[in-house]
Length: 255
Image 1: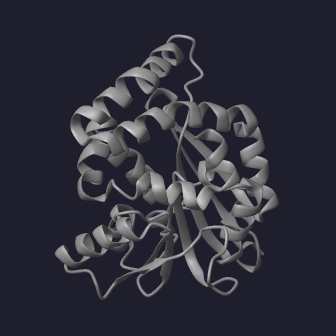
Image 2 (image 1 turned 180 degrees about the vertical axis):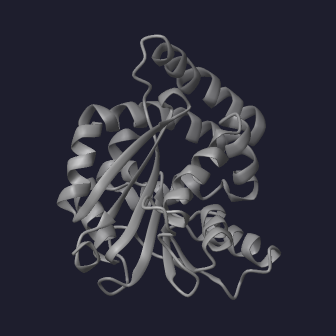
């Protein structure tokens, strides 16, 4: 599974997530002990509030949410910023659930969900005032190239923010994280969500560990900078189980 997530990432991700949408949001919160929503909020804060005492995105702007899934982040972005939101995901089943979630909230005129790949965005350069992506970099063949492509569509001075899983660095918490991701998560997923969630639970721990053995925090920060981001920041979440990153697109707005 780990090899396929890199060698044929799009096909693998579609297969992995195709059976999850119906209960995705509920089980994501249960299996993360409620942390998933808190992490998303921390990421959206950097788009909605900025880091210079004024909003980074304003009503009338357009924001892109990559790997939008069931549109949870897209809905948060629209509510917090008043901007129009475009959500992009490569799994049609997740998008169907996302469109239903958006319609249920009465936001279909403000949020558009599209099928597509984060590594090949169907948008012109500098199209968006802000961009978010969630749990993406473990499912692309070349994380550096993916970051460059994401940054390409952000306008100068615009903000980019991300949320990813992480491996705790503490010698106390790392063994407990390892036990949870290798044993509790697969079993809990199977009991609550069936075979599809067991497969996801079994995949996540080794996938996260393998990613950070190859692409540590220093590498990732430098990759953001090479992609054209400045003021790159990083915040560990929940004792190191997640990480939020953010930065601004270099250009005229920094003059």
